[in-house]
Image (cartoon, rainbow, N blue to C red; front, side, top):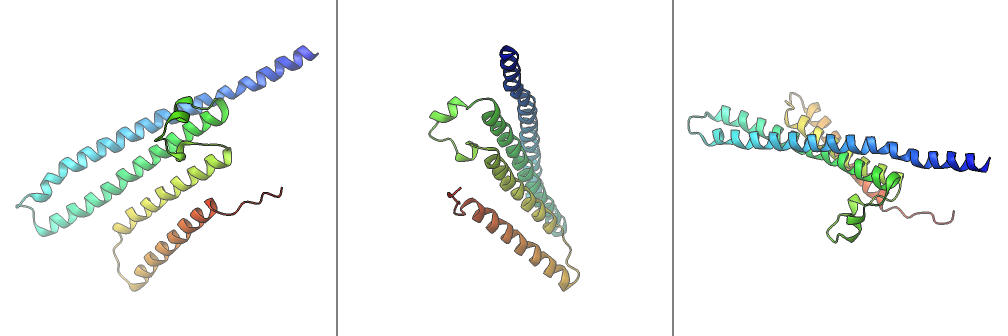
Length: 181
């Protein structure tokens, strides 16, 4: 009976390797997002040559500027999403499979990539996702056509809520912990 228990516990322990599928898929998706954002950045930069054209009217230049700002925001959004996927893959691997040995000896390694618990992973992902939402808000705010003073008030309210969200996410990371139990 003890041998069956040991075999079952061995099976349970080794079942953690199923997480490798999520790690590999997240890494593949992160690489895909990095590639897409880099291609978008390349094409956005190559289209900027038109901006200096003397043939371009002031209205067309303003439209191109607005489109370029929107594309830059989309590129930042793509890189942030790729970063979320990378942090997720590394965090899952460290939590369920093994510590990443090369990261331990690395002096320039960021603490963002050092995941110590599932709550730590969730917290880091939440902060990056918050940044993605802020970038997306900025993307929409650039395209807003203000028709009434109330529209401007809505924008100001959105900005204030973003400030509160950033403050709360920062305060959460520095809150005194209860060590009593």
